[in-house]
Amino acid sequence: MTDVTDQDATDTGADRIVTVPNALSILRLLGVPLFLYLLLGPHADVWALLVLVASGVTDWADGKLARLLDQSSRLGALLDPFVDRLSIVATLIGLVARGILPWWIAAVLIGRELVLAPTLVVYRRRGLPPPQVLYLGKGATFLLMCALPLLLLDLAVPATSVVAHPLGWAALIWGTTLYVWTALLYLLQCYRTARAVPPHPGTPGHGKATG
Picture (cartoon, rainbow, N blue to C red):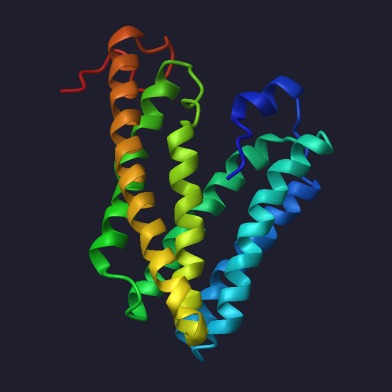
């Protein structure tokens, strides 16, 4: 996942839409329905795996190119994490539907995103940017982005099962554990921010009782 933030884009004054990183994010977005079709339709598992790997490579590339080409933008700061989360959710749903992944793991990972989403409102009401991505959070995402293709590889190419199966499950277990742990850290950080910083005047909901 790219670590370009809204604040980075604002600092550079980048309002551009047509950039190489944004084009890669759009390409990844279009790859989501294609991946689900290949996995759940004709069960073209090898092709689905290739789409998933290509998505991971372009995800890494767009952040690097944004910095290398000085093409950070506000659109990219919003689009890239949105596509990241959509890709992970779509992959989880597809793997659960094919019986590769137990539903409760997918529920934990998707539930984590649903729990953290409202915390962004806390920062916006205080005129603050979203919190910096934790190193552990990056590690958790990396493990999950490795685990999901490995589990699909286990299905698509049975000859790799002796390696792909244990490595995929190890990465999934550790990634899920770190994903949940970092969610607790983000919630604690949000709570402390809400206690220390009053809502910014003029923001929606300022002065209203929160219960």
